[in-house]
Image (cartoon, rainbow, N blue to C red; front, side, top):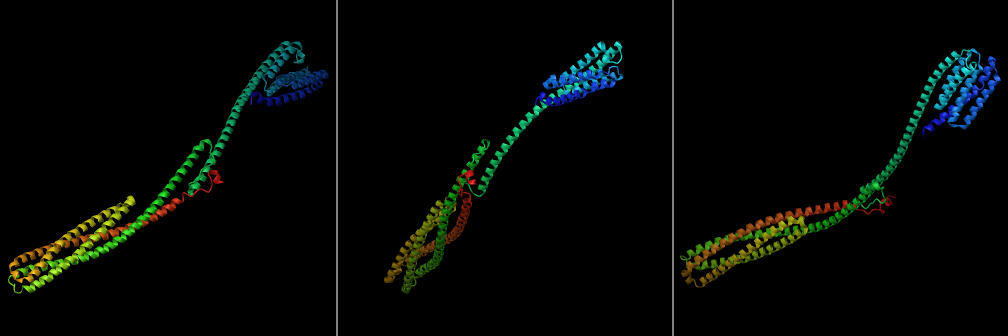
Length: 515
């Protein structure tokens, strides 16, 4: 709002007040003239004319109306002074000039005050010279002029103060207008900022609601959810990032679920293989225990055979002195040789059984190695165990072959001894000549049996170690089976947990599903 707009209303009110004062004062001059005995009709005509002029100028509006109405008010005061001509109060009536001049300040127009001041000065100067009776009761020209000068000085001071006051009011009004314009601009900017903040808050609310719904669906396990409604431009990247993150998470969960299913299948196979291998290992451990007992008994028999061979050697040495009674000794030797031959055949059967066990053990170790290779990193323990079992099987096979060689040599020697004894029985007469050779061969037989007994002891120790390792393997396979079962159970629980987050969404995407 401009300064003129701010002053328009107060000036309109003020001019109406001054116009009302003109109307009131239009009655005062003729009444005063009539009261003091002066011609009231003439004064009334002048007074009515000024009042009519004031209304005419008021109708024109603008600054001229304010100047005209203000001047008419000064004219009404001058008529009051003239109506008191010759009366003692005529001089006192001059106070009305000061009151009327001060009243003009309400119109906030320096021109009206200045014109009114000029009219007052001209009125006093002209009438004090030309018609002093119209303004002062005395006829002293010098005194009247002196009074006029004093009144003029007072009016000048009052005018200056009034004009200054009007200018201050105008300056304040201008400042108010500028402040109002600034305030209006600030209010407009505030309204604009408020609207922008409201719009931004509405957009943020929309974004937060959409994200809240997306996170709620995510917490419920729906990884297929997508925010379909487009966000405002400054938040669109956030929507795309959220949708991309859910898609990546959905894909990752599906991959984990597939791999968990694969692990569960492979773990089931490992568990079945470990259980089968554990059962076969237990059966092998039982067979090895029986074999160990059999070899122990054979070892004891070989020790007895070694002792018998020693006794046969001593008997052969005594045969020189007991040649006559050698027939009975030869018979016993034949029987002993038959027993040795039978023991050798039993040893042959045992070694065959050892070779079969070694072959089966090696086959089991190969199977365990294949299963361990299929299991990958989880089957490294099986691979180590399979290698150890395969090494034990090879050592058992080598020991069996060594025993067979010993038995073959022992069988040949036993057969030779039997032949010699039989020939000794048939040609007892030749025993005396060949008794030394028989004694030496009996010593060889004793030594061979002793060596066989030592080999059997080694076989027994080896079988004992193999039985212990087999028992440990069986226990390890049982632990592996239990671990595989636990791994399968954990894999099932993992699959169930992951399955919660890969359920397909009920709707399409975004706000469509939310609706």
